[in-house]
Image 1 (cartoon, rainbow, N blue to C red):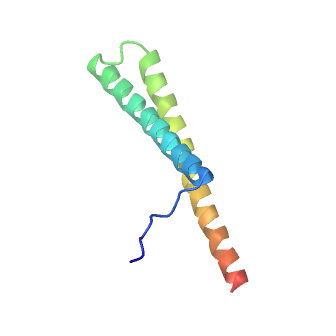
Image 2: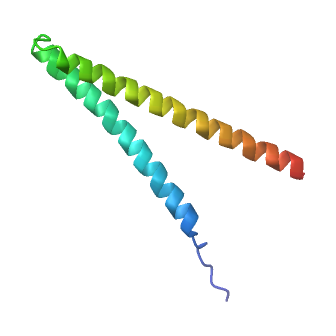
Length: 88
């Protein structure tokens, strides 16, 4: 009886997967910081200008990084589909 083995994951695949997880977790950390700083600012009626300014900066960082990541994923998917069409 033949044994079924799970496919071995290559080093590059594991490295890419780990990188994707780190990028996403870092972006979620930026969103969490923006939200937390905004809540702190609301709680103290925006007594200091630095707290909402940092909240806005973290939100801008999150939005820009997330948007760029989504665009790269879409572009890579299109390139992969185009390659498959050319090969067929």
